Length: 282
Image (cartoon, rainbow, N blue to C red):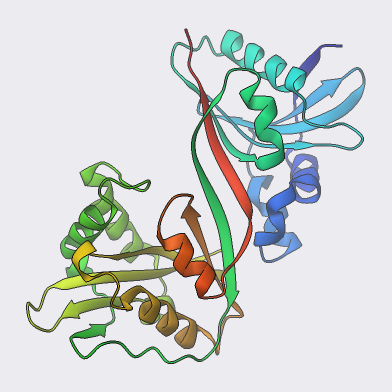
């Protein structure tokens, strides 16, 4: 039996996605789940005979958000048929990427020639009032738009040679974008930390709003200032400031990032991993 792809109706596809995509526990409500793809025309059904066997999001020469529809499972044959169809119909000459692949789906992708690029976890923790004090050698304040260049420098140095390292310009763009969209309440839960001796910014924690709930946009501490409890104190401050208005703080962490250990120690609970894989066109 060959699988084929059929364009899906937005509304119907969004309901199926909200029901069957496993890691949706991370989202705050059914309404938010259905909104994720309700405005997109990139949803497709994977059809077996006359049945909907799966759903898949196809955009920008990539595969994403694959979910099986019971009693069907995500199989190697299904992923291979999707891959072959896309390579032919899109006339691909570059890598085909697969995003947000769940752990139990990865083997089907690997058996068709995909290799893992990176993995990320979604985590969250209840907000509460905590002791956010830090060493007397440091002090903190709310970030300001004038800090963008310094914040970008901290991200560049803190993420160097790690799983979250990016091209230099990305850090400045991300920091500037943050100030364009952050509500004042979330900015108040964010921090920049200074070394009292050098008066330089050595730590940053930016809190944003995503789907109505707070999210750690970015957090970083310069390597020479790690082990001083700065990241822990910035998270405690965020959890404390947010507590009167929001029930949880959420975040994404790249597997292999040392911050993962801190998040678990601080009580953040993981909802499982999402994998990013790619297939190289020969």
